[in-house]
Length: 103
Image (tube, rainbow, N blue to C red; front, top):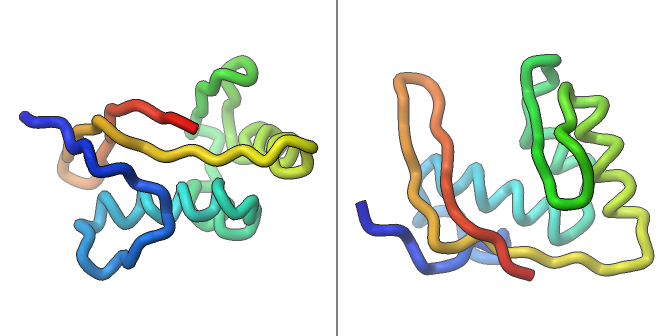
């Protein structure tokens, strides 16, 4: 499997993307525009979800994850990231992406 090098930023047309790339693009669009409503639409609202990020410990459940994004979005620093060097792995009703971020 060859990793995709073309970065996902959320700034490009989504019509040419696979459903998995579209979901990733919508996430980065929400993140890079500091849009908590769009971010909320991108995450499941379940206690079973988890996020591990470089700014803190593992967050579990939407409320903890939302709180982490609120801190980032309301902070003084303008954070911009893009996802690249990634592979997408599909199951029957789920996918995950493995890659790198830069920003």
